[in-house]
Length: 462
Image (cartoon, rainbow, N blue to C red):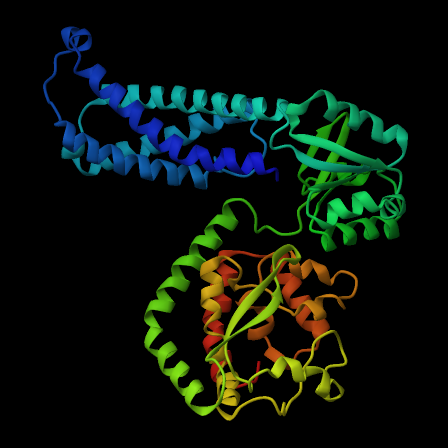
């Protein structure tokens, strides 16, 4: 998904609301104008204040119906597809309005205003989409907002795509490099630096008949470096009705994003996280203060600590926790590294860690030490639900494929925590977290959140 598509779809929400209001009031004032009232007398006049309240409610409802109908999905806008969608969406809202009038006759009585509002809303919304697309395309032509793309494949399959993207900036892509193979790309330091700095958005494989091993290497590389993968479909994939296909330069194209948590879903999850985190911080403030006093009173050092963790797309951040160890415990880690009980992956764990304080053992057993992570959620560094956040050193030892865990924000809780917590092997924990990334839904988040208190009450160490 290009950033330009995301911005244009976000902009359409308030724009649609304003235009629906405009369409309704255009119809209202036209109905009571001398031109119309001269040949169609007014028998019932609705005060502007009452009409305004009704229109606001209907417009909010309409935007909700539009969202459910896929008006704001994060895909490239095609005008040919937008008009039927607009007609269907606006007509659905009008049908609901007519049914409401049927059950509550005093709600509204002017059929003229309803019919004219319906027609004007369709015109206004369609014109708005034309304007948004024209503005977006203008920015693309000026070189702004283009998604940067690397093309892999034989010269004969690359050239048509490179030519199309060069001539048609309105497609929203800019080819920054082209190679025959992934190995050739990996031997180009300047491009590797661009990828490391998150300046490349998409890797495009144009050879439709490469071997499975090479295809897996490319997919893994894209997952590890948080790039979208596009590839030319072979004959079987092009006939598979369950694959969302596009066509560029005569090639059927498949796109792999890696997680459904994008576009409006990402906005919904972030909004949910922010609201719930803020509510819990206010609700648990007395507990925060009490625990901070107990920690300070029972051992030397601050009540809170900041621990380095790796978040979305490999960005490091400071994760907040209640201090459960003695002061400067991190400096002692190398001294007790030989006591590490985890030999199944990059994680470090000691069952009877000598650095943990008495109150710290209780905090960890109940997971109360993790409550300050609500502030990380508020800041947008973490989510309520997501993969377990790992240390930079642990991430540096990730095996092939595990960097997909960095596709989304880490969470305070997750599938691993509610499905066995720390008793899981690292590989099992990673599989659960990757399953969550690939199958995210708000319903799945709610299930995990509901299971979390039970997991905390079990008293297993995190």
